[in-house]
Length: 340
Image 1: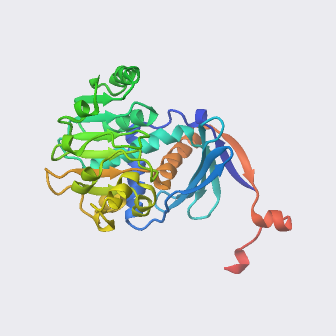
Image 2: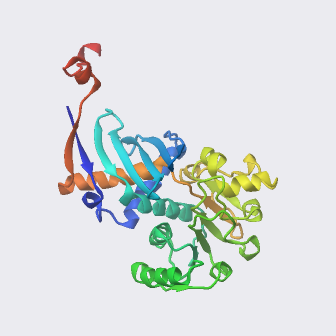
Image 3: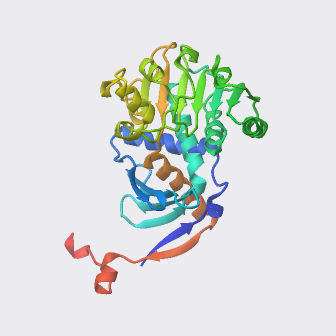
């Protein structure tokens, strides 16, 4: 039997801060840019009740782990549940099964921060946030760790939501966060624009995007989702988390391609290639850049592995046993020594 640990959200809560998540996720994307394998999300759907099962995997040799991310969403309770198995990348030994709900907003926020750090101007100091939910909060928490931010504007179509976001996040990020009455007011003069919505129609307009703006588009993980209009995608240096994922489900890019204003050649590079130095990021102060983030196993696995190691050091978690195939099939462990 091999020892592993089950870690629930309480076991891992508070064991890493935002800069640490960003460093872990940056390393994972760099590893991928240098050849570490991963694949985009696989989605299976059910009709009655309506729901989805999603899964993706990665191997991170330098980080020392491999594993995946599986979650269900929708169904009768319109909720989501996440689980992340982690294995040792060298031995294949199971290390942990992590309740991924706590990991989710931290890893997605960290990925956004890596995108900002790779593509936004060094002197970017103003952020517009479109959206006011958990993902918008995660994005802002991480973004302020990679740039000196002195002004944040948030827009949500529900006044109460944007006012609550502004009040709570002003304290969290120790920066002035102001609720505004339109997306145009939020975006006006912003150096960085974060869209974290579930919109199926553009939430910002190309005419409101100034030269030199960087955009983190977070809600682009379904062909029917669309936070950005075709002109914004056309004029930008477009960098997705994974090229294959962009061609699979990045709604804004796919709809811009359908409109005939971009094609596959307009995907500048994957984020990992930019982080690894194998592709240029921003080359001109006036460029508009986009990081299209739909979620990958790279960020989930690296964030979960960070928390796993911290949890073990803290003595957290419940030890579990997972039998090897040889134990189940023959009743004894397989000895590989004579095969070497």
